[in-house]
Length: 264
Image 1 (tube, helix red, strand yellow):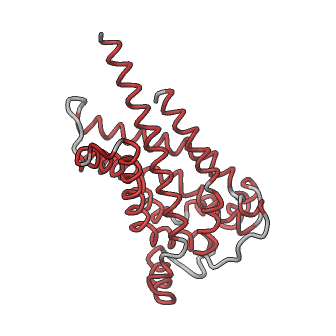
Image 2 (image 1 turned 135 degrees about the vertical axis):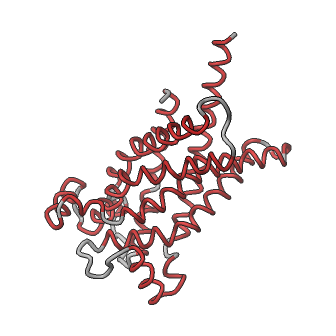
Image 3 (image 1 turned 45 degrees about the vertical axis):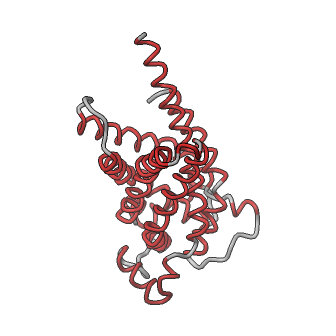
């Protein structure tokens, strides 16, 4: 991983920290909770989110790169389908790290404890394995989400630049990120809703599985219930896709320019 990748992750961490109120709003709406009444309440979970983003992003990028090297053997470029497929696999693998973080944030907001106290309370209630409740839903969500920012976002941006060269790089990036982010949010939000409900219900008294959470939510509230908090999440995802995508594009261009300079 390059220094530029590290810089991208640092900036991504700052972005995610600022987006915590959107995450809090989404979780409260999905789980039918009252909204926080204090600023501290809106930012509860910020440490877990910020501290985990860099290692999770690093894992996604590393797995994506490893799969890419296996497929291409370093002898050719990736097709659009291969690029998106690699990103999906990387996202699914990263759920092993992401799922316990999500559960910690959800329970932290529910219990009103710090991250350490929340983890201790969850483990005391159901053992260490309880930290990975909802991982299947998380894997499905992260595979599509990661395919969006590592695969579909760059692919769409490049297609837009080729089709509309007069549009400019900035506008093309905004449009590409918005399309990819909106698609990722629309496809994954019902999955995210089921994950949130499962991770909020640690005892399993309400929901025994992701499909059970989906079916029960649909029965009681229809399709609208599955998309509760969807707008806040879409805004966050589109913004993240655009900012992180541009940081990564800069890093790749910088790296390629240095390689070219070294060869000459």
